[in-house]
Amino acid sequence: MKNKEIPELVVRRLNLYARCLGYLEEMGVLTVSSKELGDRLGIADTLVRKDLSYLGEFGHRGVGYYVSQLRHSIRKMMGADKPRALVIVGAGNLGLGIGKYHQHFLDNHRVVAYFDTDPEKIGQSVEGIPIYPMEKMEEIVAGMGVELAVLAVPKDQAQRAAEKLVLAGVRGILNFAPIALQLPPTVRVAYADLTLELQNLAYFLEKEANSTSPAGFVISRRRKEG
Image (cartoon, rainbow, N blue to C red; front, side, top):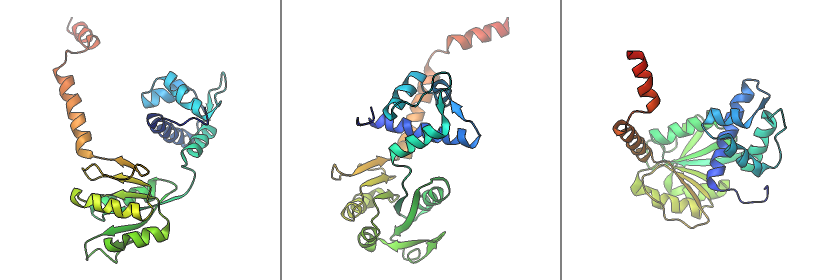
């Protein structure tokens, strides 16, 4: 299956597997089964095996998967083993927080520049990363050859900022602004809308609150009361 295009949902799960495998590697775990990996992530072992089949044959009967080998193979397929520079548009609390997280926790992703409109921030640097004016974004991003960007600006600025990034050669954007960007189909956009995610959680909490209690829970209560 190595030459097949991998569906987006599978890509997301493969990245989850790689992260989990990284934790296992830090713990000194040498091998893991598809069931153990699935149990840690709440994913069925049959689906884990199907997802991992995109990498080829890695499982060993009676042993499972070698943690380090599997993690390396996933990261290589995902392109995570290559150093990648990224810029953050918006040097407010959100943008700076994302930048600090990337610098300390995401290997091979290196923040090289911030962009902002606040004259008091322009010319400053955060942990050695300079903050540039928005009007120079196209020139600087193109000069650095950056292909990844994070948008952490108000929604009324997001579309224009995204267009400038695309003109500068950016091909992947993580958008935190609550707006759907209109960009060429050659540009990949991922959305991180905290409000929507909280609304989704609220819906499921409300649904569970209004549903009948699970049978197992009712039985256990009755036994305790008896």
